[in-house]
Amino acid sequence: MSQAVLSWKADIGCGDDAYSCLAGQGLPDNICSNFDQIGKFLSIIDSTGTATGLSSVSWLPDTSYLYSGTQVTGNGWGGLSNDTRGCKYLLKDGMTLKLDPDITGFVIRFDINGKKPPNRVGKDIYILFIGEQAGNDVHADLLNNFQDAGLCGWNGANGACVPGTIDPTINNGATPTSYVLLNKKIPDYYK
Image (cartoon, rainbow, N blue to C red; front, side, top):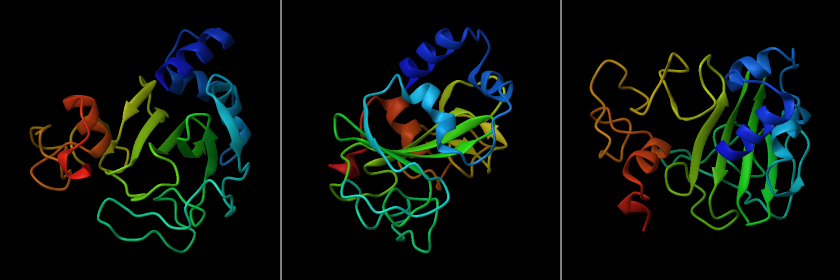
């Protein structure tokens, strides 16, 4: 993803961060085609084309699960399945992506093994951000509902990050994506 963003910035001649490059375009919210300018640097072979509605494609599972193990239901944004909202993409290597296209960035959930189980955040679904905050290109999960960028847990902005802790909700552990980036491995519970 980082390489795709670097290629896109070179292509449009923007030497600033992704947030500023996107903000300067005046893009509308929730439009999948906003991502086309970056997506052309990925090996996308299929997509759903809609951000807010549900779509049913054979390359996505019917259900997915949040980090807690709770099934995402009711047209939610949290997982990556046919039962969730967002622009969905199938890559040549079988990986799937779902993104929320905002005007200054993209929240991307990606499933490293596509339709295969467990389809759960922190196990085979991880989250990256392109832009979303000034000074950022591609970065890991954000803290406290987009208040602070970093590699600690969703609840741990006031304490020290414990990157070896798998659960981001306990002792300022790393978010799932951050755990992989910091420790250079998938958490043991995934195996």
